[in-house]
Length: 230
Image 1 (cartoon, rainbow, N blue to C red):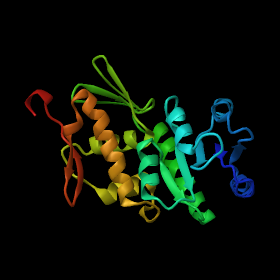
Image 2 (image 1 turned 135 degrees about the horizontal axis):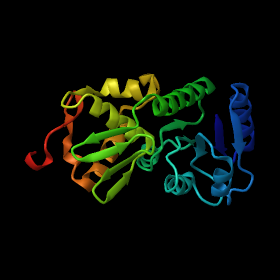
Image 3 (image 1 turned 90 degrees about the vertical axis):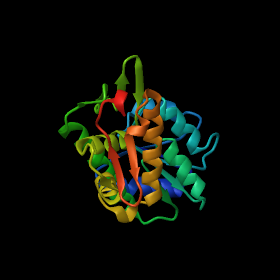
Image 4 (image 1 turned 45 degrees about the vertical axis):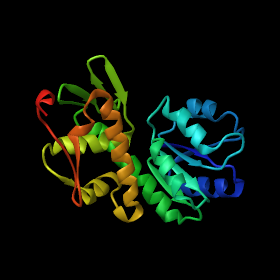
C-alpha cells in the first residue's frame, strides 16, 4: 500500500516514514510544499497522512483540493488542541484525526483499520445498491438519481451501505463505530455524528436526507418506503 505523508517537521516525517516502511508500506513525502497536488497525482496513494500546519497552505486547503478529485482515505495530524480543527477535518471528508504527540502503535492501528475497511470492503461487497429510486455505486462512492450525481467519501458510503443493509432497523452508534473503525477506543463519538450529518446533507440534495433518521439515545436507521408517501 502506498502512503503519501505530508508533514513539514523533517524529524517527525523521517520517523513516521521509517516506522511505516518497517510495516512494509511504501511511503512518499513532500519536498516542495507548493506541489502537493503534483506529488499526489504522481504517487497515486491508497492513504494520505497530512499535518494541518504546513508551509504555503494549510492541510485543510490541500484536503479540499484532493477531495475534488479523489475519495482516498485521509488522516489528519495536528499539534493544535482545538475541537474545531477536528470538526473541520471531518467536514472536509477526512477519515480520522490524530493529535500530536501520538503513540505510533495507535497510528499504525488506525492506518491498518482504515485500509482494511476501505479496500477489503470495496472488493468483497456488491458494488451497486438501489434505494428509493436512487442507485448507490459503492465502487465509485457515488449516488445517482435522475440527472443528479452525488459524490460520497468512503466513510459516508460505508455508513449508508451499513444502514441500507439494515433497512427500517436501528443500527446503534456503537455498531457503526465498531464497523467503521474496528476499535471504538480510538474514535471520538462526535466523529460519527459529523459523518452522518454530512451524509444526510448530501442526501438532501435528492430529497433523501429525511429518510436517514436519528433515534435519540440509540442510533440511526434508513427508511425504505415510497418517497411519494413518506
